[in-house]
Image (tube, helix red, strand yellow):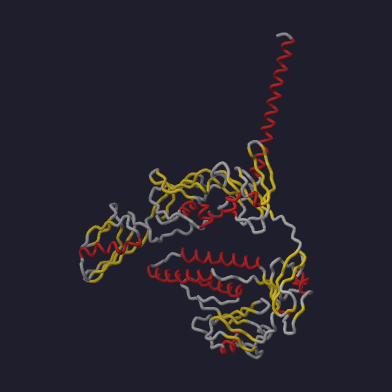
Length: 543
């Protein structure tokens, strides 16, 4: 090869190498951009990740709903009485029958639980026309083993009961794999055919879970993770949220993440094609913006607050609302007030919406925990079944009433020398009460009433003046709610003492109901919730 040809060949090779290097550099830059984009939300948990922390696998469910259909292996407690007596626990055999003496085989497989008793009675009446009655009841659900596979932490074959939920088996398998498992693409297979497709977001957001009756050999298959976006900032639920399809919209994502009321702008960063794009949009415009897999969204409250409004009522002269500069303190407001002659400025009551909201959330969590405790307790003996059923019914009624309680959101100002330095919030409500001269006795007494305050009276005196304890009263402890928002829980041994400084004009003596539940823990939980409601709403809820 001549020198001239050699030179041309070298130049060509160098050109190709240079071109490849440039392409590689561009690909590397794009890859880095994609990785940066994808990693922007990696610190966030997958939405629904908290489901699998043992709350389901530790609570197997052997009960039945009315729609449960009897299957092979179920046990049925049967009693016949009258002209013919018989009592036994019968197992549904491989043909789906139970055998009743003098009646013969009765096919019960496929019969709904709610119709079982009437179904068996009809068959008994075909033989015993008169004077024989029957009662049939499912005693235990069928033990099954279910395969859990796909993108879960520990695939395998897991034992349970046919009435256990899909969540029980997923939790038994360690939950859905954080990096690779899908929360919105879960299939239940029976003999290789799809029985049900489950989206856990429906359960997390709306509480909807298909009522499945699993059988031996069924498979729960968790699919691969779909595209997702990460969202944080002014939202109630930060996290990585999955979606199906090439894109989604912020409006769909916010149905899961729930924006805070103050959110008004969205910062969106995503890779579209080969370009990384960042935008900062008003929320009204951003909700319709297509979001691609890997997008990162941050909701922000971007507004300049210059003033706040605070309502003032009670024993004051002046306007009902004060407009103050943003950052104003309680003392700034107090300096503007003109008290009436009968005002009690030492018992100021400040109510705040954000505090009421937090109190409501805390109450709901306590009620949810109580409901879970009541519904998942298992009887240890046959005698416990009726007691647990009665207790669960009472607790359900109590929870229904308790959920209607609306906390007031009082911020306690008493006993704090720096209360005046507290920053006010827009929407705060300040009440200047009338200088009180009475004491109220409420709750579980015969005649709830208000009585003229007498410093020589004891708690026992006030209770007697209100007719004494009712039959349902907790006579061991009561609550005194003071006008300034502070509380005192007083034990029985002090009822007959003159509690100087503890009882004051304007107080409410609150007599709680006595809780009589079969489980000590349930009694404690209900009692604490009752006290929380009493203090938060200034009302005694009956049980």
